[in-house]
Image 1 (cartoon, rainbow, N blue to C red):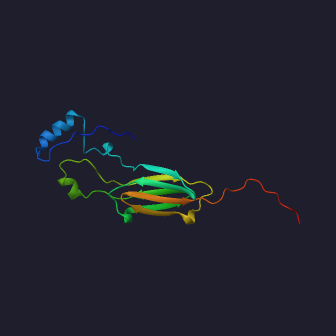
Image 2 (cartoon, rainbow, N blue to C red):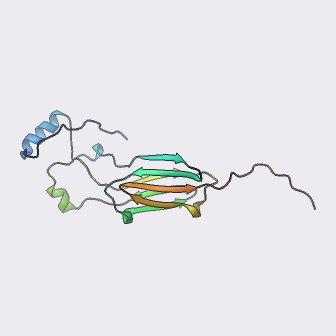
Image 3 (cartoon, one colour):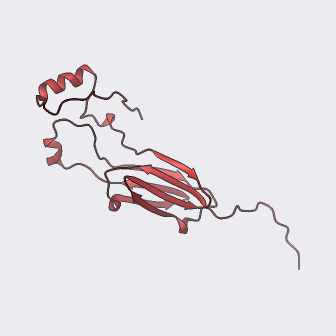
Length: 145
């Protein structure tokens, strides 16, 4: 996915002439209404902890109820299904951010305790704690009885 890193310079809130805004944006090759300019997948950090791993996903502006977390075939998937309403879209004159649906997945370690996974959402960060059981042994001597 390509990200457009060009940002519009500060504009006075008194500037309301949308024609001028559009010319200014076109001059800088900014297209605020293009979906391709928005980072639609939140960035995340994965941290090794004392008990396993923690994923910290920067996803401000959502509510706890919008997140859906699932585990299937040892893959953790986080998704949000949301879109702006048609009425809201119709009234936007300049767009610098947008809330969009996204899906993000991670392969879990084999020793992950999926029953112990917990998630919380605080100050725009989704925290997912993934406990890992003691490492599995690859070798073991078995006594014949």
